[in-house]
Structure formats: C-alpha cells, structure tokens
Length: 155
Image (cartoon, rainbow, N blue to C red; front, side, top):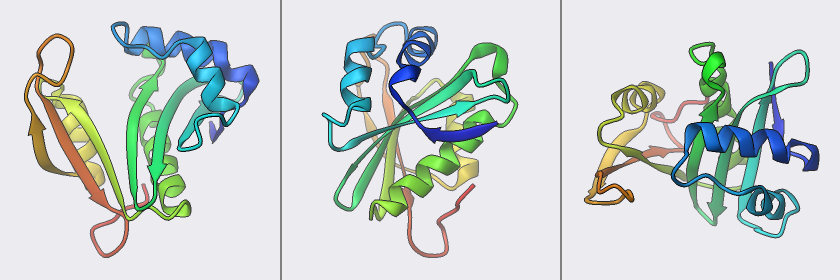
C-alpha cells in the first residue's frame, strides 16, 4: 500500500468512499474534482492505494499558513483495521509540516470513541468542544497536534 496525492483518475473512487464513510455530508465528485484540479488552493487530497492500484482510503487536508486542518480520513469498510488510516494520518502530518503548518486540527464526533482513541494514540489532545456541531446535533470534539517540538509524531 502506498499513499500519494490524488489525481483526476481518483475522483470516482474517492467520491464512492465519501458516500460510504460520510453519507450525510459527502463531498461530491464535482467538488472533489475542483480540489484535485488545484482550484481550492488550501485543500490537498491524499489517497491510499493497494498493490492492485485500487484506492482504499483518502484524506483531505487544508493548510492555511501555520494551521492545518485534517478535514477527514476515510477507509473502505472492508479495508479497515489494516493500518491504512494510520498511514493516511502520517502522510497528512507530513504534508502539513512540509507546507509550513505548526499545528494540525480536526473535529470528531463525541460518540466516535474509536476515532477519538485513534487520534489520541497518535498524539492529539482535546482543546475544545463544539456543541451541536454536526447536522444531527452531535457535539464535535476539537483535537490538536503540535507539529513542532517533542509532542509531535510522524506516524
């Protein structure tokens, strides 16, 4: 498995993963295409590709000056618990650092215990809560990782 920047041929696979992982707020193929074409200058999309060349996961990262935001990581359901999410996270951290970010932020649903633990093990800490952040009224937990200094990890 490798992680690389998404290209135009990846749009359909990413869109399908978006619908699987985020059915209520998936990015559309058109929106993904705009991002991949570089028309959203702060957004980067990474894909995890298996040995057969199939997209098995993706990450969307936004970098604005010293702050990066991991907007989402998605892994194909049948591919979960195989290290793909960890590889995408490590690549996202590397990307944020390479673009000069000093901090990486993300939001996760309060009830998503598995994701919260995944990010905590990677070195993220809770810095805030956003009540009724999600469309269904769920609270969002804001997590942060400092990208410089002894607490930062690279995977």
